[in-house]
Image 1 (spheres, helix red, strand yellow):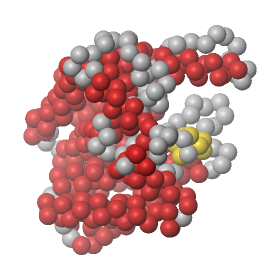
Image 2 (cartoon, one colour; image 1 turned 90 degrees about the vertical axis):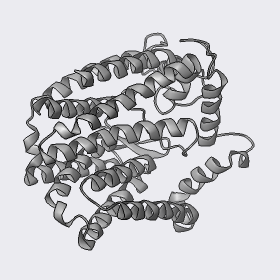
Image 3 (cartoon, helix red, strand yellow; image 1 turned 90 degrees about the horizontal axis):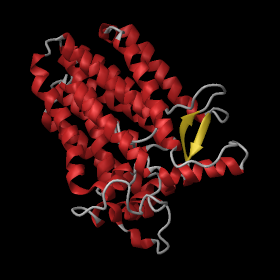
Length: 378
């Protein structure tokens, strides 16, 4: 029951957030569609809000369907391989010119006629955790051997290249950190976890310094890190570095004494993507420190509840899958928040259960349903 209560509270928090912070983006989008003769009715302030309600309803129906699926099918090696291949093919489909949609310079979405657009990376992250839990359990006795580590490093490097070409740095970061947490839980020695973490940081620095020399396609990586470190390099304050500055203004301006729900101005075009990537910053300006802490408490309690009850789960596969799912939720949540307060460069990641995007909401609910299913079974 605590899982469902936290889930409902997070969803309500997200609905209230989208209702308020998406007003400007909703009006601008519907106005542009009317101008392009795509829509014939008047512009609306609540386009994203109404779409989010629909997204939650569809996600809820899908989550109920997933609840009826036995978790034991994920323990079968053949089933896991089929799921992994299907999700990998779905992810690679973004590179097909007439299928993949380019949004903000990246191939995020798949758009097929008569079907809703989907973001494959969200399904990929969930499938990655299911696949990794199965492999770590089967290879637990050899997880500290050189052959195992080499195989998994090579496999992850190949996957990361796919997301580097999209480009999707945020998914790379989440998969890498989730892999470390799950491998550490599956008895990978701490010194090796630290070593892989340090190697990853050094690899990111090398890519940052040499990205533009490798190919002009990767120049965005160098720009993103450069402007994150020194936003004054661009006096006109355009692009991704402007987003971070406007987000900081929204968060800190009324940190303790806020303007209350529905008020203030940063959501009116100053914060790009206020309904998705920067929903935390846009809502912070209206609700301030107290409600931000309430949101963080919901995430922390969700993690605390699962960690406290982890010992009650008897099945080793269920334990490993449980650790992977809660790690996936918590890592993405805090990466998004750290981007909003400029601890990390922009990653284009949504805030779980809060941000707009129907694929993300659907996968978040599937994750919660799987976690609930595991604890209920125990």
